[in-house]
Amino acid sequence: MDKAARKAILRELREQERARWWATLGLTSAQLDALHEHILANLIDCCSGELELSEQWANQVGVDWSRLEQALMELGGYCDCEVEANVCPD
Image (tube, rainbow, N blue to C red; front, side, top):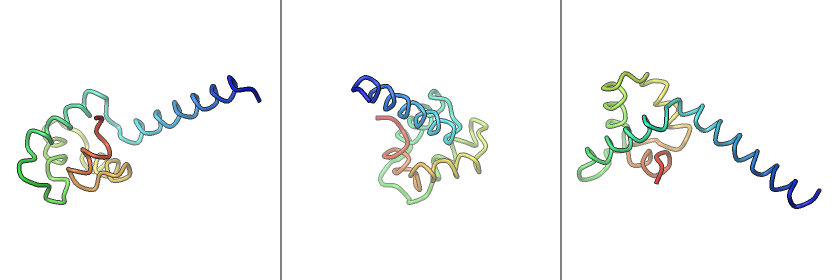
């Protein structure tokens, strides 16, 4: 297999992984940006170790919290600061 073919395979695998990630999350990029902004605006001193701000945002915008909670945890967001570190874009 030549170098170009390997690069094409790797590119396709990255695209498939990205698509799986977004499917798991179940949010649009605009919604994820809004969640990120909500957490940043409301995370005052330190994280409570819970997903309080994420749940608050989901309830405010009508996102199914139980589904989002499961997705966030699957992607490494077990509390609001971990959502920022592991789920939200830089």
